[in-house]
Amino acid sequence: MKIDAINWDILKCLQQNARLSNTEIGRKVGLSSPAVAERIKKMEDYGVLKGYIADVSYAKIGYQLKAMITLRAFMGRLKPFLIKVSEFKEVMNCYRITGNENIIMEVVLRDQMHLQEFIDRLITYGEVKTHIILSNLIENNPVTGHTEFGELGV
Image 1 (cartoon, one colour):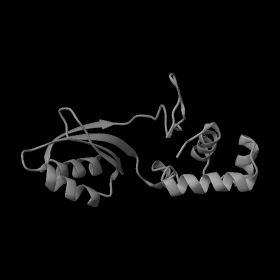
Image 2 (image 1 turned 45 degrees about the vertical axis):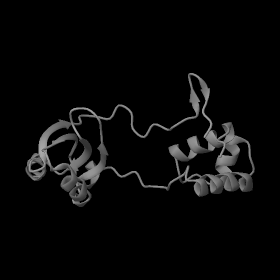
Image 3 (image 1 turned 90 degrees about the vertical axis):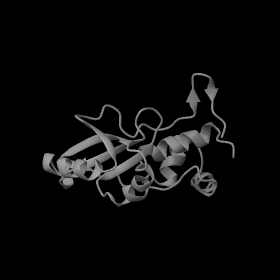
Image 4 (image 1 turned 120 degrees about the vertical axis):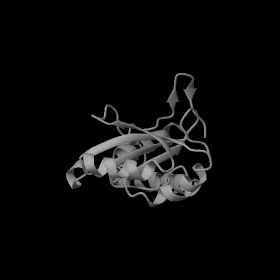
């Protein structure tokens, strides 16, 4: 599928506000509502658009700490961790990475005691390093098709 400049503009609109109507998007990108709907459907079918989510304020629902936690797995403990991690409700995102650590997780926690309890569950799998997030400098920055080398074709 070719992602042209109009599709990139549609993607930008949806990344900024997925609740925009096709009519509103059409006004922004210069297309009719049915043409926008057709392009969105094609991008959904192709898997470019994977879904639509609600952006929740964790602090407003009682999670006062947000942290990035890395794990350097002990010998033989990585595979058990990979199976178990999906059960940890604190984990918002988890990535398997290269480098000295094997895993990096974005987690939300109620307070320092919750952090301590969570770390206690993790240390059976490996060496843990915690980085408490103080503030977000960039959050959910939209992916665009414009690079220093020109437009990307997908």
